[in-house]
Image 1 (cartoon, rainbow, N blue to C red):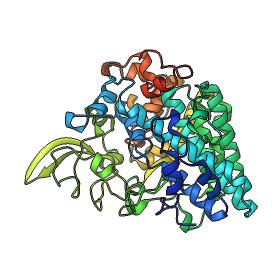
Image 2: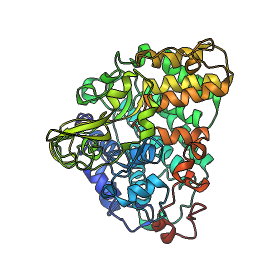
Image 3: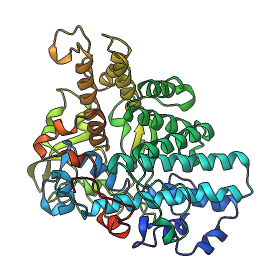
Image 4: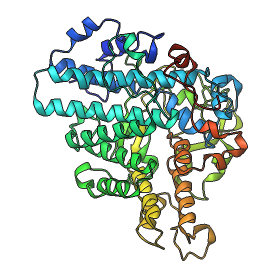
Length: 487
């Protein structure tokens, strides 16, 4: 098996066939099912097929671009300050997007191509003679990845087609309409429960980046939290914390130590999308994407600065004085040819790419600080306890950031929490600055029901809580796929 950390092109056959029918429903059908059926014969074949599922996370419609656009640009964390950064991105930023805005289609297609690749592994592996433990692990990895992709889809679009088997030809795709969010969530939960049961806590260094038992637990905890199933969320998130001896998760000593190429797959990381520069399209674009247009080589020394995901003025002000996280997350100016330009930009992904849009930076999907903050939130939802355990988990994050503790007895009102409602806002604030520019803010506001209030001055309307279904999907299969209301 190739090292998943540095090589995700081994299953190129699967990725090619899974995305080859761009005009067909769901873009799922392989070009040649006969070739596909003859391909999966050995454990090595299945390993390559599974690598292709991981590779789909690199698609533009997933973590290469769409997930940070949806997670941050659609929120109050970042914005497009230069129209040259892209009209479609501006539309997402200011809630003027329509069913033909390209990201609607890119996100939909990228996720369903990945789901098709996962379904291929789950379905085809049953007929392959191979070690039973390895087979179970491969299925668990594929189910974790499928669950992650469906979790993204259901939060972005609402009801979506639930496809859990390989689509062999375009005609099969026309039988799929939009399943309810409840049906989709039940499949997500089932996949994560199965993944947790069959995945190991850790891997050897050669397999860094694969889904683990802890990743399945953490994602399942987030799913339960999103569904407001407080008891289940509490149990699962506490399990992640209690099993730290097995998972090896812990907070990194410093916040700055979480990020950067040298820190990838560290002890705080639970799951991250692997990128590798100079590897035939496996590099990440973030260093270029997040550098301000016009900054020349001042922010990123190789390639073009694209001006995407620029921190807002409100984001700059969101940090408390002396918060150690700010300098590791964003800057407010750069110097080019001896001249200082005031301009916010993200520095979490700063690096020197091998070429334009070809960096080594991974994208962290889940990390241990996220789990601690989710658990603090769940404890508070189960019942506010002044200076109870929820405060301990919140303050564990604040302590690393160099900030004063929050309690119910603090003399300073800025650090005093006296009620469940105040604790909710404290967690929201802490998540905003702790997880800044990691694609969480929009989904947090959506989950807590706060998006319409917080983003009111950005022009958000109730129907914007869901992204438009790509118009191409509605046009291709109007009898089965209806547009989201308001578009």
